[in-house]
Length: 341
Image (cartoon, rainbow, N blue to C red; front, side):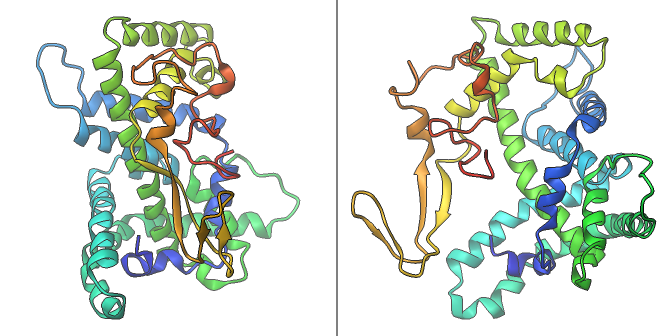
């Protein structure tokens, strides 16, 4: 993605502590905030008018996912700032085009000269977003430093946004660049890029699959009924455990990911061994060779799935061990390996 040119500040870290922060986030404590943002965003962007039609797909879905993601990343006040969300989305949308031009159209010898010029839109939107994020980062770093200085005192509450976790890891670092607010801001924006594009495409595909292929079985009606029943059983409050009981919903999304993959190649890897790698069939891959697995062909293999060309929303309903986010060699929408598992 030409990160070194598009957003050099994103790669000044000595430790990838944003990954540690993501792994430590207590999603059970964040469920209420996520549900709150989903409700507000859908009502506002899709509307509650049952009489008049309005377009609600790609643009509004992307903005909805942006708001929900940023509710988790930077908190409730900033995630609803339409100007910040606008520039964050522009940053994300400009990455792919800029990276393509840099990697495909500019010879390596000329990249140090031309790539920064091509990346100017990304850097501009990064700077615009920093005007909103950096003040929050500075506050989080000060709060995190106080927690570090006062030993043996229990924290009053668990952090409810990713920036708080990142700040706590940052202040523990002995490297000044790890604590730079602008660098942290850029890293948060790149996490937006990773999360928002894929989530938007997944949601759109799922809605289209459910509407187009699930009409005969009233898939949407069954999913809605299940949600109403689970919510009632949980005293009208969504929790992580309650969401875990939405087996029809989970199955429908996994089936959509299987049938409507948002990319053709998965499990991308690069050979790092200096001597290269020899595959079991004898094929030799020299160092730096990039390889991938044909995702759509695996997901459409009759060996693994009966009638693989059809959308069967509740294909996995009775197989709880195959939840939406469970990766295996027959389902690689989320990749494969230690990070997926």
